[in-house]
Image 1 (cartoon, rainbow, N blue to C red):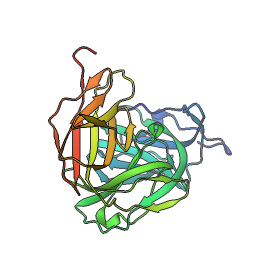
Image 2: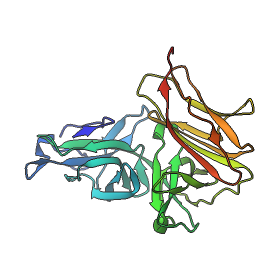
Image 3: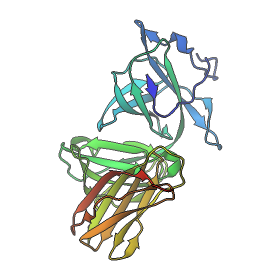
Image 4: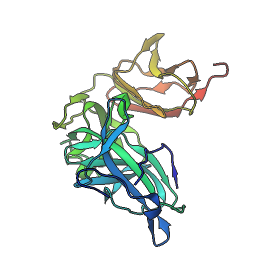
Length: 293
């Protein structure tokens, strides 16, 4: 078993209102290592604080390449997921974990794996737009501290409210097979406990959605821009989540553009983007390290 992003780990069942985690050695089921995850408060320094009660708390494991398929387990209880690669987060009442964590579960090991997730206030997102089941409604939190937290639901469930950390939210309707954006939602500020049903933007030009994967090297913030007829157009919304940078342009009046990566360490030199008025162009690409950074 390997965590792609380390989880904070505590030492050792509840005593009154003070909660501690069981020892990792107890996390074996029928000779196989299990997983246990616990909610906690969030301190001002970004680290987790005291553990919270695991009551009414669920662990969500969403397949890494299929965000709409997730399995749920109770917090504070050992469980064994299937071998796969997941996004992992917690939901509890009107809160949600501050980040989603990448997990590669191999089922190999001699002790259990324990994780602590800090909880933050949640809002609720959905869309009332009719969506087919081969498509999905996807929402992205654009606050950097939440590492581009995403929620996604296949068409038949898109009208069902989903928790996401409060903050600025962007997203749209996506093809589940290709991952391409079909329409972009009008972005909005989501407050704690608020429910928002997102609607697509009425486009007057071309829209662009970009996901740029970055090499795991020390670097400062990545900024993106579209180069159109010699002009550099910054995105309307962007978040650098470390491993990936997400950016949105909601209306570009052009039929082609070149993607610019603004950073001292990484760059991108792919082909021009073809733009169409009234449609969304999706770019999923990888940045590379500059030859002479």
